[in-house]
Amino acid sequence: MKIAVFAGSFDPFTIAHEDLVLRGLSLFDKIIVAVGVNSAKKGLLPHHIREQAIREVFQSNERVEVRQFSGLTVSFCEQVGASYMLRGLRNTNDFEFENAIAQNNAQLSPAVETYFLMAKSGLAHISSTIVRDILGNGGDVSALVPRSLLPYLSAGED
Image (cartoon, rainbow, N blue to C red; front, side):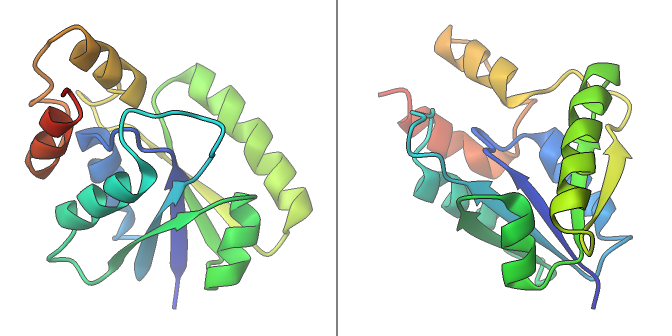
């Protein structure tokens, strides 16, 4: 079985993230959306809420699993039996950053291969950082995040 890990902070999960997972399912039998836990960072949403919200996005797709993890992504891949990492690229800056990480990951765990998918046209401008900024300034993010996430983001504004 071809299992891939799509790891990130996903704070919050966007329609661009959702698109990468859905397109990745044509390459892999199963994708584990791995919500990275960094206790030193205070995020928009608590980690367990991010995990719950993403699980709702994919609730009807048994080929997508959502889990929390901490530590090295390659170690998590080994732990869950994933031979692949899925990463999204929006631009050349992402490529430079992700390529350096992929090279180091290959050295740490040669059995785990990184696959890059380019952002779909019309989605490359979306990032969690931009969504947080729009939210923080009272803007509407309904076109940027999956519909099922909106109640979580409204609750986070209190």
